[in-house]
Length: 367
Image (cartoon, rainbow, N blue to C red; front, top):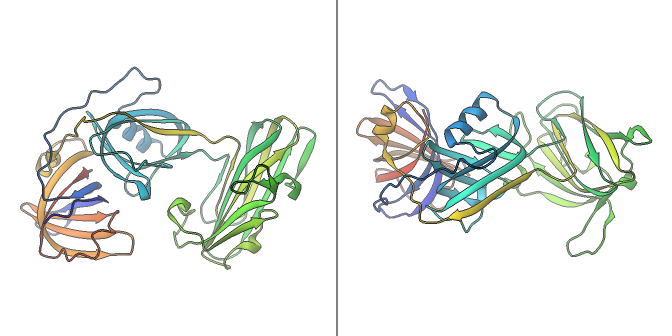
């Protein structure tokens, strides 16, 4: 078998009694070729806010949805740029990160630095997501709730982005503000502007995009979705939604701030919403070296060690394979049990008949 396809996945081990006793996550490469020799990567601890992979994982797990500034250095084990995924390894372990962007130029065994300033770090089903911090976070399924946030803004055009989704039931979306000499009021249409591609100046209104969403309980990951339609709106308004339920909207553009000073924004929504105002948080992933080589260990060794987040290798026969449209699930029968793998980047594999074929997989195993 010679697929040479990168893939992200989740894996669990099953005991002889049939129970799933180990949980884990894998960023996988299906490959028949031998892996390169393992070389440890030196960690630069001189950077401000520098943290090891193990320290990052522990801090993010202990305090999810926290605002942090972090710097990580490590070796690229695998990437899925289309889903903004990066598997990063240092001497303390390996972590799967979802970033705003991941360069297609990154290669396995490159050394990169991830720098995030005042960003939001959240848990995902497969790892950790680093995204710009919203001014107002009103996500979730709930009735009409108002949340607010304050920010110092200079006069002139300031970036704005408002996300909203409706699962079912009643719906609502209102954006208000107050500021220097401005009493609390609904943000008027005259404040909303956008900049068309290629245009030299700003024009009235906000860009909007409409989505279907079936992600229960929270806003969708809009970067991974394709809008049903888009256009320019006078103001944030639910009349642009695709329907009464399972729909989402994104309004983006600029606010024309009249006077420099502190402004408070109030976002009322049913169901969830997020508001971003002003210069976004800084998140950068840069290449700082090449030919560093990841460290790969057998799955059996990883299961015997106390720490999760190891980059491992395993082999087995595919006894199940199925797809949900975006991911591919594979169950491997290997010498000491079963391994359940969920492939996230499966476009090159779904059409292949993997059943009863022997596969070698490598990736992150957590348990």
